[in-house]
Image 1 (tube, rainbow, N blue to C red):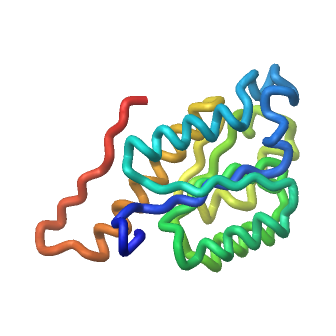
Image 2 (cartoon, one colour):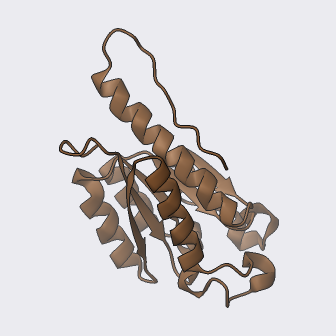
Image 3 (cartoon, one colour):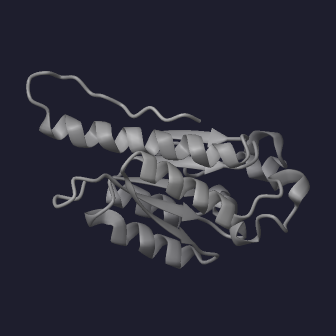
Length: 171
């Protein structure tokens, strides 16, 4: 949480080929673009009074560096590792190293896809995985990340009330 603004900060990461949403395999991923996803995420963040930083890369090393750099400022991470889901130990290790609540999202249901896509090396270290709901996977994922971050930040500053109020937005 930003000490000056009091706002929760979420890092959103889009993995490889997600920059081709709306063009690539629309029968699987739909006709929405990455900019459509980002616009929706910004609107949700604004409604929740949360700051988000959105990053897309086709490079594993750039994603690792972005996660590492978030150690001191992000309260949670929302990530669609895309193809890196299935084999990137480097991204997995970076998430473990920064120790931030992480939500993994996928546009398609990876468990209904090809056999090699059914394994995630990220899911067991993520707080949760949201998969198969199209663009709504991102919406649900961001809401979960916000709630996790707020809960985590509140729990470190709770007085004796032990009450945590989670955000509620219209989906």
